[in-house]
Amino acid sequence: MPVRMHVVTLEVPELGNRCHLVHDGSRALVVDPPRDLGIVERAAEQAGVEITTVADTHIHNDYVSGALGLARRHGADYLLSSDERVDFERVGVRHGDVVPVGGLDVRVLATPGHTRHHQSFLACAPGQPGALFSGGSLLHGSVGRTDLIDPRLALDLARAQWASARLLGDLDPATELHPTHGFGSFCAGSTLTAGTGEDGDIVTIGDEKDRNPAFGSDRDDYARELVAGYGPIPAHYPHMDPLNRAGAGRAAPRPARPATAEEVSDAILRGSWVVDLRGRDEFAEGHLAGSVSVEYSTQFATYVGWLVPWQDDIVLLTDSPRLLAPALRDLARIGIDGVGTHVLPQEAPLEATYRRATWADFRTPPTDPRVVVDVRQRDEYEQGHLPGAVHAPVQDVELVAATLPAGELWVHCKSGYRAGIAASLLHRLGRSVVHVDDAWEHVAEQGIPTTTGDLAA
Image (cartoon, rainbow, N blue to C red; front, side):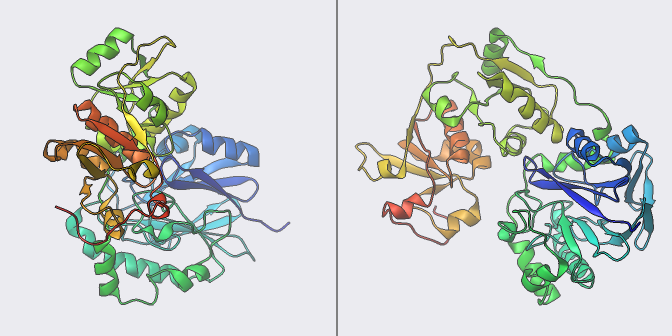
């Protein structure tokens, strides 16, 4: 009976990533799993396959890998570049190695660029197009960024990334392309990944050669343009590499600790991060003074990891206990565990409030001085912003708060999510704020003028 290859793509939107389970109907390889293994094990159980091999394409910078823990739990081989320095046993693999997984052959390809020792894995079954698991190398419409290891290496690694893309471009055009990054992860090298390969359609190497800027470009020009387009690096990213080299993902996360109302009050008084998971609208209507709004969503862990200083105490607040499990899971994925939790009782006094508004409300002339604070990233701001708006990316709001002009602060972003976080931070610091909880595209619909170009002073 001929061997058939099956690829199961597992979305991890909270990390902006994908994990992949590839199997022959009996034995499976898992590529780039997250720390929580349930998503992978359920998929393997549903497919009726045994996990015999686990692989990381690279030492990850955006999340704690679950590969070592998954391999040990299932008695599977853990594949990782033999050139990586790690504190645990693994099966070190090099370019050109072929690893059998049941009836499949998995060929190792050296694809440096996203990291120095990055590898891609090409799975093949006789008579079928191959499936390439490219990690942070060739993405859908882009490549992985090259500045996460060390910004000083970014340009050299960008040149290597270009060469790696060309290497992968020489594969059979029918080869399916299955990257890990590029679906909202800050590991992606550009915004070109948006809307590509996200609707269940199969993307091939041939597709990429027709649209990816890495093809048909000069190496040095491409590298310079790639590096020039990088945005900021989330603050928790530098902590992921050492955690993964130590094999931190093999251990279960420390459990959360329930916090009493008195302990929550004490945490606020000592300046700890008390993070409210409720909707940003509910927070604006009433919250504990001194708490911060980070509405639970797929972006939750990214912004908690970015804003809260590493290893600072965190207490999560909610009035819905069902939000705690996913929030704790998402934080554990980036190495944050053992946090406090508190469920707000229905009668809890939530006396701190601020106003929410739309862009239609903005058109009404103010009676008092009004300061527009744009908390989007630099590239978003430069593509179009309100004249005179103060640019303060959400991750920098606390740093620049003391320099913001006097007046009521109208805080906005693209959708309202980041503005909700920023408004709560500024309100915690004693400023009068209005949270513009509206989509940026409504600015044009309301006829509000905008400008483009350099940052406002």
